[in-house]
Image (tube, rainbow over all chains, first blue to last red; front, side, top):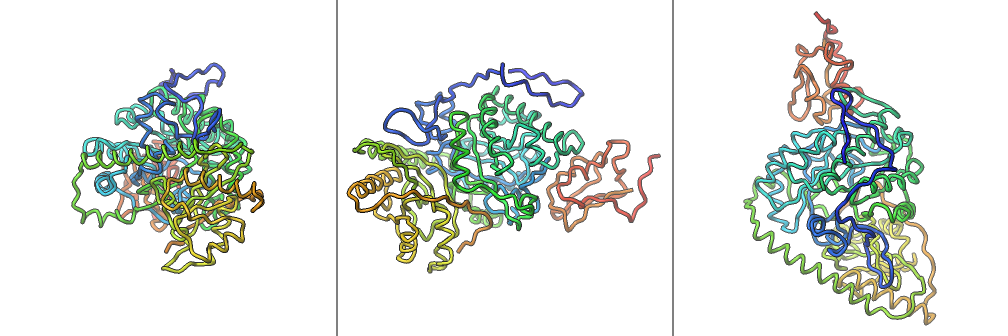
Length: 522
Length: 73
């Protein structure tokens, strides 16, 4: 795929119209499934395909990357290092004093690292957390606005930790200039944040960009940005580098438009599309926060994601993590790895130990798949079309293994008689604080999972149990420590049986709220 | 003849430092500073001051009124 660049002139080229572009993508799955159905067809919800759905080379890159594979995210961990502080654009959802508020905990400035400090941290974490498979450079600014720091970090890691996959995230403005360098370091995953392909939408999101020694504003800025993003995406696809497109869903600005973004990025070979909710609170000090632009409700988000199915595969399990996050998605162990603590650790990079551990993790993951298939096969009775959502409290490993009170997030699954589909997660404030339940957290927790019929946990106290029942959400602790899909399907079969017998009546649930703002932790 | 960076507002993002054609910007303790004797306000190099254009925080890279404006020789 060739894009001619003119020497000397502005090195961004106009888009060719979509008709006439045919992008050759090796092994792109025809229909992706994030769940399994017993019968025909699969819900096209994302990235948890198996090896039979894609070419072996792509499966190798994806199978233990927690962001690119929904299945992998239960078992494998990633970390980010904050080596890239500069950014070359301004987005209305970002306040640079507090990092990009797209991330989980705005209001906390991350500790910037030099490349040397970053590498030391990666080696320490990789030894402590052997299931950590991916290192990403995502910020705190833009990974390609400070390219020297980014590539220096990659260079050192390639030498010292060759089994770790390298990943980077960018707004795409500088991307076309660095595709060669990215390929040189065997970075096989790149994320581009693309919120629009139409400059009229873009000027509501981006006040300015800094490009070619000049600040551009408004529609002109947005046009340059989208042209460069599309060009960068095409160049990456031509190199066989897997791309994930992150889009921030801003209700009233780009909600319907994201459907076109989905089709446009798919046509250019994007592997995944991750549609995330806007996070905006006035205290973040962002333009959207201060002007009252709200984020989407859970149903609005799901509607846009569902509408995009059939195009680029969707990722639904993004945690919108910080640029210095460490651990399994949903947990953050970064305070175990501050610079001072790392100085005191005796760190040796043990490749063999990591491989052995990851083999065990693979075995767990196969076991989870097998349990799920077994549970599906055991389903009997007609599919009456009933669909419910359930919330699951888990610490990882694909099992129902978290106490209600210790959960900082719930994973949400959609169930029918013949399928389970992961559709997202909901963050909540910690209920259990210092050994006692904080009852004032309960209403917000109920709000966050209000669209669910049940919540599956390992254990739950009497008071929250009653509150949940009163709100119409069944607390379920009979399946503690079992694999999630198996537990959910077994519960659902039992639920349908109770409905059939007339013991309970089945009622539709309302919408749920997506949590904004900083967390209150214990 | 100089711009200055308001230290209390500087986020230390370093976007300005590589853009200066006169290498007048340096970092100290996480915050960035401009050497006034080196700053030419980008006159003769670019149409707009690069550090100002790159800086993400409004009113943080501003004309330093303690110095006379730069005059090209």
